Image 1 (tube, rainbow, N blue to C red):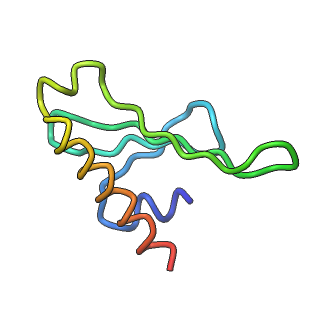
Image 2 (image 1 turned 90 degrees about the horizontal axis):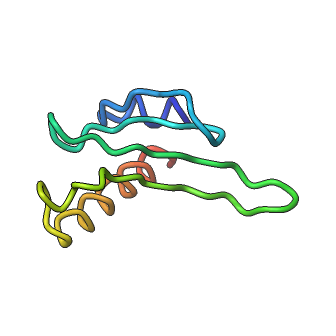
Length: 81
């Protein structure tokens, strides 16, 4: 998964953190998003979290954050193929 984040041109930087994989993705030069991924196991399904800064609405509208989130997901899906 870390190869997908770092090699798709997203500029993601793997980080230590909870989950099986975490990365900081630069949405804007001054505005990163933290991505966390947990693989599925016997008890829980796979989970993907996007963590935005609490002040994100100062920089992005709600609609822009939705489309940004969707663009990141599309890039991940393209890289997985």
